[in-house]
Length: 410
Image 1: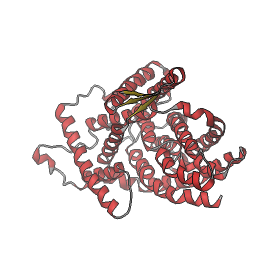
Image 2 (image 1 turned 90 degrees about the vertical axis):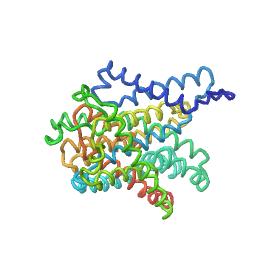
Image 3 (image 1 turned 45 degrees about the vertical axis):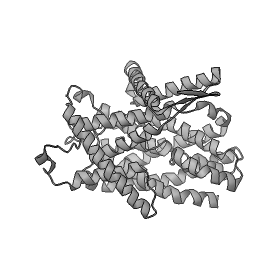
Image 4 (image 1 turned 60 degrees about the vertical axis):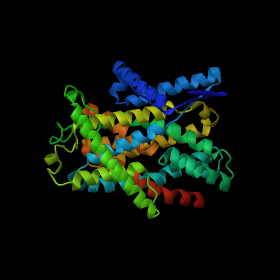
């Protein structure tokens, strides 16, 4: 920890430690406030937003900007998506084939609508159409990473000097809205249609986290170590896959190739092979769900607590208007288009919670939304495989084509 002028630099170890504290605070708040628990607001969201407000007050009162080293956060993201891959079976992939295509098609159509709504919102403030694209798939579907990649080019080509500020503000507020939207949407659908998990899977372990029903189950140290070993094997293979596709000229985030590595290992290892060597492959084991929950929760807590809310004030008018329109669009599409198209069942409701996270926030937000819902209502293995495949892989490819198209034609 070092104070440089009016910037307080917090190193990686302390950042992770604060992230864990944020998780505990979020859990305590969710346990004590019925509304948060009732609407499945993720615990890291509750704690992360509170701490980001506190750090904002530190800046406002003391003029000290808190800046975190988030390198460890990115490692946690790789851990989390590797667990999702390890939990995925061929049967789920086959079953999820049609729903995956439906989700992909609706999401792509939504991306077109999202850019059109962003352009319309920019028009209300007499701003260039490029500002609307920034407030569309650049910052929302694309998130902070896509914003950082595109903002300098948009600023240079369209004369929008504050393109980066608009994009970061939109991505940040979108992340908050996505975190708060998924649980209520799923709860509305589940209660209105009296939905329950598939009878065949209702007693399965969670994909992420441990349900109240399973809290009393013990996880031994060998179970935990066995799961860590499996995750590390998948990450090693995922890293090699990432190097391989990079050599082909295709740039993918490391967590995507680790997700695929987990799927490959789970479904290609001969049945019983590891058992001969005293190792049990931990697909959908309680220890795997626990590690997934800790990795995702800490990642999201660190992401939210590190938001610099004071940077959003000057852009409040246009950004909040555009994002209010985007929020309405996302809710309407989730409830009236995606849910019926996905079959109006429990899995469809959980996918809608994930869709809410993807369309306004990011893939980890989608997974946190679904985790909060399934820990309360029951597992949905299908949702946890098709949502990350669409949001972490296909959507980035589509967005890479869609962004330049809208910038060139509007």
